[in-house]
Amino acid sequence: MLKPHVVAVGGGHGLAATIRAVRRYAGRTTAVVATADDGGSTGRLRDAMALPAPGDVRHCLVAMTGDDPTGASSPLVDALEFRFEGTDVAGHALGNLLLAGLAAVTGDFVAAVDEASRLVGLDPDVARVLPATVEPVVLRATVAGVPGGVLTGQVAISRAGGIDLVAMEPAGARAPAAAVEALVDADQIVLGPGSLYTSVLAAAVVDEVRRGIAESRGRVVYVCNLRAEGTETFGYDVADHVRALRRHGIAPDVVVTQAGGLPLGGLGELGAGVELVRADVARPPGVAHDGAKLAGVLAELLP
Image 1: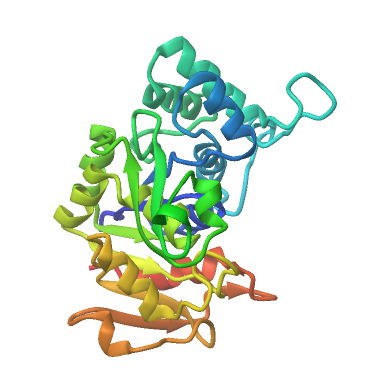
Image 2: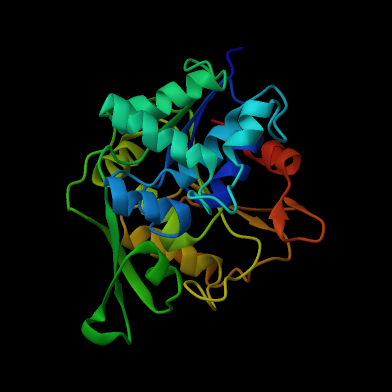
């Protein structure tokens, strides 16, 4: 029996955790990674070079490498996460600088990511990391209680509550054709975990990514966070997360949540045909997902 093609969508450490889980059971893994981050090393490079955010892509390259799904396996891969101190490039991660340099040389951020993938030994027929956009983008949110009702920039949005909708600037920003093809072809699409608006939806609301999810032949699985966030989804229960996804045109087939974790809320509001899976997917002390546990649950959800 052929192993499945699984596409993971999102950003940050949550997406990296999902990649490590998916690599345990998938024959082919594709990551579609948010590119709107404007903080830290990533933000400084974006200001200087006008490129899609490299930081989450770097995390995913590290997560994707090696036969060992629990982490990096070579000095080069480890070095991608190395952060300089006390130099002219203080605060920058080597992987961010590498991606920025490759983008400058190739003139194409997707080609830069593919070249970095080759350098760390990824086989594109087995494991591929793709940015959610081919061009620089900015995340915009409509937010209750702020002047004008709008916030711009992922960092600013991550510090806000009362978020209603997020969208990309420029409107109609393009996704790589390979990302859309992977989504449509996928046997399973996994969204999350991670910050709902600034990681998961920051990738999924790109128009072509959203279309690829809607047209996919595979089941769409949303992995809920283990606990409530202190800012952008403060007070959300599981049903609130699903409602937010639906407001953005994302309709999950399955929702996975930690048993005894976030309150479930109005289960009837999940929508007809949505399967709820409550399982132990956390590693002690319950602040991060366990790769092996999550892999076991996700593998059982394949069509």
